[in-house]
Amino acid sequence: MKKIYLFALSAALLSGGSAFAQNAQQVLTKARLSALQKSGKVAGMVKASRLTARQFPASAGANGQLSVAKSQVYDDIVSSQPEGTLHATDLRSGFYTYSVWGYIMAANYSNSIGTYVETDDAIFLKNPFNGFLTNTWLRIDKNADGTYVAHLPQPIYEQDGQTFYASRVKLSTSESNGSTYVADTTAAGSDAYFTYKDGVLAMADSVYDATGFPSAAIGLTDADGAWYGYLDGAQRVTPNTYHKTVLPAAAKKATYAMSNTTYSAYDVGQGFVETRDTAHALVNVAFDGDTIYVNNPATKDSSSWIKGVIKDGKATFEPQYIGADTTDNIHLWFEPATYTVELDSSYYAYYGEVDKVRSYSLADKLELAYDAATKSLQAPDSTSFIVNGSPSKVYYLATYDEVGFEPWKEVAATPADPVITAVNETYNSEGYASVAFNLPQVDTNGKLLNTDKAYYNLYTSDDPETPYALTEDEGYEYFNYSDSVNIPYSYTDGMDIAANGATHYWYIFFDTNDIDSVGVQMFYNGAGELRHSNLVWYSLVEQHEAAGINALEGNESGVSSVAYFDLSGRRVAAPKQAGLYIKEVTYADGTKKGTKVLKK
Image (cartoon, helix red, strand yellow):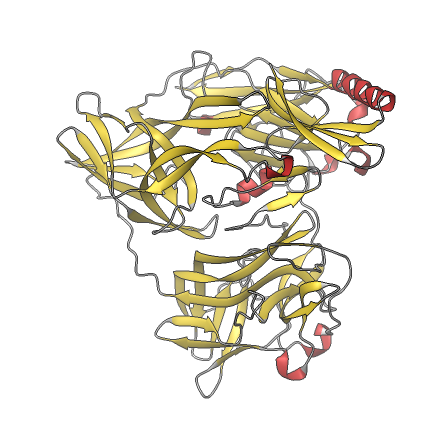
């Protein structure tokens, strides 16, 4: 069974020498969390310990010695949907924790997807942990008096031959250890109780105490009762009364090129370095008389449409529900918005610096100028077309600022060259490294490509004429595409190959000191004609030489090590591409200093 990437709705994370803080307005998706993995590989689940207000470190110590093998009522994991009445996309809220990089994060959540099956004698709740999607079902039995009880522990998840359990955990607080959750080993406390009335399923015995955390919850434990950092408390699943737009059968669909602006501004000590750019993507747009429909650009779900009305040379879009995103386990809304550029002290507070960000405010409507002759649309300045995780506050999955749409037609095209941005060799001694690279979304003339018709090959200097094959013999146990050489542009398994838009990661399982370089080449089949980019190489010899120079400089100046990170937190040996980097200097006394470096 595959290891599952984590999904989080609200948290901030600080780990090691690099700082990563989520914008408070932004949903942290599985893809974004994957991109933040410094080591490149998802660590195994770690037994958890001390809890603080929003962050607590993990340890290997067990938190309780509940013998689940002796006390469990049910023996098998319920992995298939049970027979009964399915409630597929209700609204779910509560409190949860999740684990990443050895830290446990805690937050309240809302507008998550609640799915359960109702039978005559039980309710089966899918994914009992909002922060760890097991894709299994928790059985909650119906009592004779109409109340409901989840007899715990229950086997809920299996990974690498080990069984994990849904167990009742309780809050434990002490001056020395702070707050944590431990298995409730009392005979009367091992179960979890629910109520179910008028379509509302709610935990009855999980309430917040003075610490701000639920006093009891359902947690993920092993057979010894050690908590592994994931739990849900104060759960509540309510009926979904929202209705999404249905595309009329008569609507005429067409492929459009969507554009939107991006912005970043970083304080490098001599003022702000501001970057403005334009992003592009293909999206389906449909027309039915004076009504326009835009397919959800964030998820590309063919059943998720954003409806607008064309009148007097404008296309007006108002707030609306657009469906449930099962990939990120959240309900989505379209929200029109405006933005201002403001100072943000949170992102680089770790370095005592401030940056500028776009801060969004919801609006009643968004009006785009509509050209009837070309059927193109353009939003005004300082406006945003937002795919949002809430109907009432900014909590975006994606923002499209100054969004524009124009018809697109497929033609034969040569893709622009890939860019290999970094090779992370930090974990070379442990048997793997990672290659970060960007695949272009445009051709050599800057025209947008349909990336669904693109693929790429990977190379090493061991055999520069033959594409590298991602086979199980080479360590690629998670790569599951049928072709081990021609990798689709957007393919991702989250473990061996990861993709997030144009940014891609390739994990390699050999000593990179044994090769001189790695390479990437992109192919595009446009209008039935296959063309390719140049084969682009990244020199590991130069990287190793640069690392040696850094080490020498450190020995001569009382500095024990110098490390560089890009703005996504990936470690690089030394800045090679133009851009902004974080330089972290570790001194002989163990102190560290982080500064920003602009590579021109």
